[in-house]
Amino acid sequence: MLKFTAEHEWLKLEGDVATVGITQHAADQLGDLVFVELPEVGAELTKDGNAATVESVKAASDVYSPLDGEVVEVNQAIVDDPSLVNSDPQAAAWFFKLKLKNVSDIDSLMDEAAYKDLIG
Amino acid sequence: MDDQAVLKTTPLHALHISLGAKMVPFAGYDMPVQYPLGVMKEHLHTRAEAGLFDVSHMGQVIVKAKSGEYADAALALEKLVPVDILGLKEGRQRYGFFTDENGNILDDLMITNRGDHLLVVVNAACKDQDVAHMKAHLTDCDVTLLNDRALIALQGPRAEAVLAELWAGVSAMKFMDVREVPLHDVPCIISRSGYSGEDGFEISVPEAHAVEVANALLEHPDCEAIGLGARDSLRLEAGLCLYGNDIDTTTSPIEASLEWALQKARKAGGDREGGFPGADRILGELANGTTRRRVGLKPEGKAPVRSHAKLFADAEGKTEIGEVTSGTFGPTVEGPVAMGYLPVSHTAAGTTVYAEVRGKFLAMTVATLPFITPTYKR
Image (cartoon, rainbow over all chains, first blue to last red; front, side, top):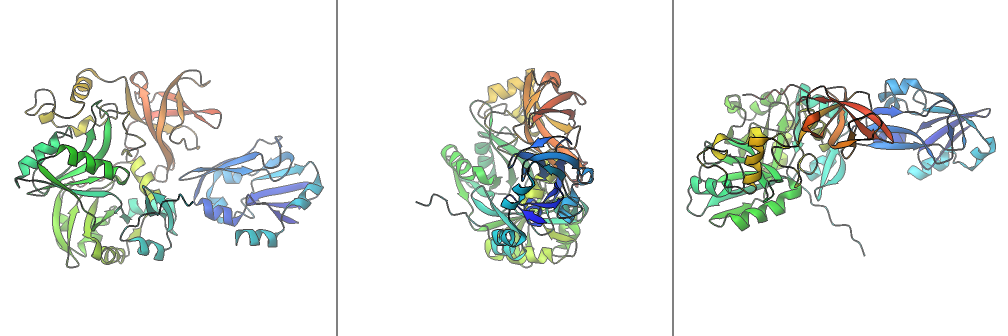
């Protein structure tokens, strides 16, 4: 299932592991990305806590964790080539995989229609 | 109550919107930070071909002596600027700055000898203060802020070719020459100068014809509209200061490594030694050195290090020694670049210092400026 947050992250749940990235809308707002800093594998993240940092030419932005969980994998591809986030943010340019503390937490997040309404 | 001030607009505002610009407030103006190309591509395009920038928010000021004599206007302005303006030839431009009583910098600017008057171009953020400063001190001159002219910068290796379509005589201009020339039958003042590290021109156009001239230049296939985002990364790679970041009322010109802008005539032993605000301190620093200097800084990793990041002598962050004043990602250098102030004990090229970024201490190396090789047509 595909879910979204008000901070412009998307999640794709498979079992109890959610793949997390930022939306096309977020990538477009940020502009050309030049740097990505990902969390450590094994890091415990809390909902709305800092998970990653992205930098465009002009400024740095925080990426938040959508839910409580443990980072089980990170995407080195976007560290090596930050421009991938601009070209394919909702597939190849995923940020990290989060083993959710409570799978049911995902129900509180927006579905795609609600996110589309949010961004107008 | 609505506290938001209404933003000013330049004569090219509608053009930016029509080109799909992302607009942001800057110095009280609604300005294009980027166009659909994006900051990276706009920056790279300027270094490869030609970029067109709207810099009409900057102040264009006429300083004319009541006597009508250039020399009187020049000597008057020399009371505020530590630069040789009397010796500046007609049709030539020079970089300078207003200093204050403490020897610190009030603004940086360009000064042109226009025959019977001076044309002074100042930063947008300081324009009102600068005009007031000149009016208060240049009592034998008329100081007029032009409010009916646009300013367009055209920068890059193809800038001359693009401008040549409108005026064939452009190829005879050398770096820092200034000419008054009709472009598209519109009288313009053109200087061969800029803020990108590339060859290029700055064109003062009557506001009624600004869109027409901009469009005529943009028609050339090599010319693209460029926003303020790329303007900043271009100037940083070129080692150029941004007033308010790298120079301000806490920095002297010598600390800022701008001593090259002072000519012999205004230095110790010169014909018109001193005679500007803060002369004692500035001439003292020329003789005895300063305790700190502005240098280039190259982060060793990929993370940009931005302005206000604190600098430390050690990797543990125990000894704070300075501050980053500008930092960004340099698309041409393909990595982060920065400038900041360090004690002279740490300003040798190759020295390693550490910047605090998000709680970590990132290594940076002192680098000679500029980060790229300028292509001025000297």
